[in-house]
Length: 237
Picture (cartoon, rainbow, N blue to C red):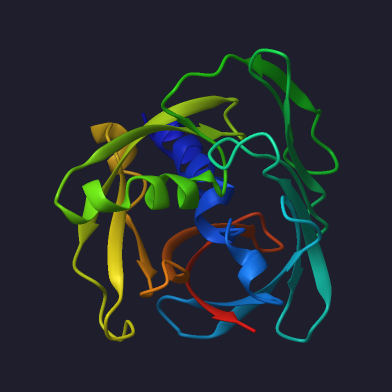
């Protein structure tokens, strides 16, 4: 069981939708910058710099506290706001993740580090499937239902495990120090075993339905391969 829980923990850390949040409405701003802080020490871990390339394509650059780029990502919403394709590279370990569309379903590729073999699998799609930053699209599509107290179950793609896991969205109380007037949602695994590995993720949105805060396991690991638990605050410039 411990091996399974550890694997799931790493999988959830790599659910890029959660910590990256390449916001589908980012075109309303010149740039989106996220500052990720350690939830315990409050130290700055890294910054995310999101830039819209076209109306459906975004680029993200990750910088360490000294301003050095260590990871990059591109995401494409042209086929769907819920199941986008993306590629991410973290140069700290040589980690690479790619999800690309097929005629039916998706091809998922994952390489843990420079020394590890590349893993690849073709997965079918279903109406409940969500990929990466597609969580933002789900929240916006189901905003009214969620704010009326309904729960929404989705199947999140976990690239590190080449499979999906069932999660539930629902409205929740905002964390302390969240901006006044924010609307907050929790994202929790449905499996009791997965719940042993990761606490619920909390996201906060402003009155314009822009993500302003994310608190939980991030998709970015440190030099030892350990994934951060971060409190990420977003600015729209």
